[in-house]
Image (spheres, one colour):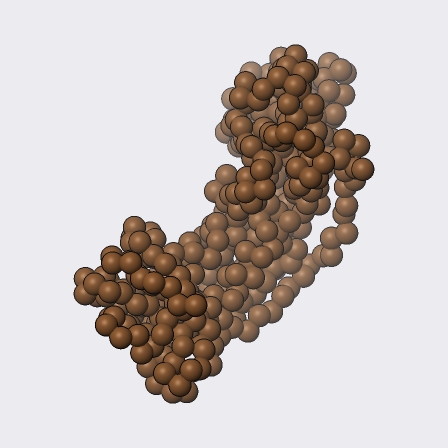
Length: 406
């Protein structure tokens, strides 16, 4: 059904019905919606009737017949001022219309730890009576959090916001022992969604500290995973973010030192910090296996495999997603323009001006459907040829905790 257009609103067509009754799909609509909403213009999405009487109708790529294959964008406005604005937006996007190649990096999107954490919350909501609280974002993605909120999950920053005796899920990023103690004191029913690979780093911290080592944690200050790891043995752990921090460490060269890393760091930058630690501390002890997780490693390697051929790199992920931000930084280090987008609506027309080949990936906490939304919208802006470049197949699976296994 066509939408009734309020005064002052702009309707972006997700389909257009031509006078002869033919319905034309407009898959590029989210691109126009994103720009209009950035301009703070009230925007609706729906069907546009090309012969709608009494309305100012602006449709590009639909003015003639037949409609060009793969092209379809349209806007409609009631007020002349809005119509002029809509026309300017429409003109910019139609000028960017061209056939493009999309290089899909694989693997991308959800990893096993993220899948597990989301399923834990979904099962808790289905199985438990009363409210299910989640401390922090279960994973760092706004779409995932919004979806779980709509299903009934209540996200809180700290356990002070959770009533005594309630059910609470710890996020995939892990928590410190102090948080666990607070949960016990409040009588909370805890369901732990900590990624097993984060739990491995926590266990390693306890083990090395028990040997008397000073622990150097490589990571980003303020990240929830880092806060949880620092909390395991706070008196014996020092955080460093870069090589310069290593040079400032107040530790004697002959002190037994072990290092740990956040699981979502950039491989190349972390290697530089580790090399600096090796040069500084002759007795440095290293982890039995890499702390940077398989999913972070795989997604960075996959992006590297497509970045050199791309004119532009788009990374789907939220701004607080460490592994997603690292992918953007990796593309920049390879000399490519790259942007982090929460979803297709964040794409800006100026990014596409000279981009005939687009490298596309997603962080480990970004839903796969968001990537398909990007491909579909670009296809509506002139058509796309999609080439998937898979560097490795992932078959990792983590079991669920007993609290939600039934």
